[in-house]
Image 1 (cartoon, rainbow, N blue to C red):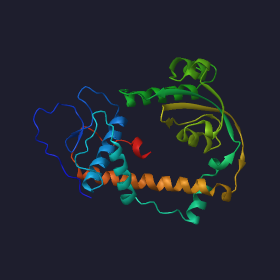
Image 2 (image 1 turned 90 degrees about the vertical axis):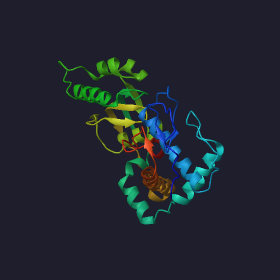
Image 3 (image 1 turned 90 degrees about the horizontal axis):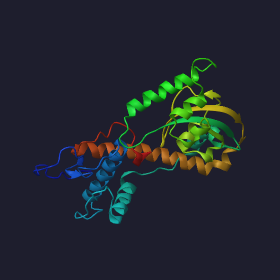
Image 4 (image 1 turned 45 degrees about the vertical axis):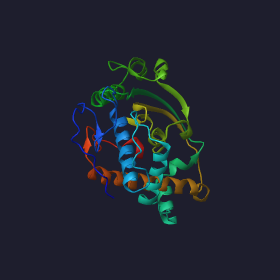
Length: 268
């Protein structure tokens, strides 16, 4: 698929504005986080590709705030249906996935958890934030009742979650109580204690301590096959979508945004 390029010789272009094929993704005065900028860039790549493929009128324009029209949304969906097909997962693939992710298909499993949240907010220096989070993780892992600060003290001082006031305590959680990416980290292993790695979620970086676990009941494959198929379809879609966006980006004139820096919210 070929994305038509816009004339880039327009004078008086404000500096620092990210663009896709000359189309501005934000106003000169608007400050966006890296993830927000990547999301807008990916949406604009798809909008322009939908125009080039004939799904969207050439007069449709990108909104100044990154919003797309209803017509553009429908056109992008039509484009993706054609360009990113979703094959049905096989019985064998479903059983392999189920076997590899058994903890996700238990009922009644709970963990008692506390955490320290380092929130990722617009404009935050993510590298510096990660260093602070890693230092806090090391401090609480080294706590032996002497010099190192306790988990409670670190949570009270540093956590961006209201739970910091109670030492970061989140109480007993099931997988349904958590964001999916947070649940995967908590329920995919049997670890107890301060986890030796930061947990990433849509809210930021977490230092997590699992205080207790209560095992649940494993659901048989046949009872969860529909959920397994859905998970596999999503996995395939994410991989195909990422590849499709990489192709579009390679054909486009991309300015002011790094599309290779991280997975974008659009395809998570």
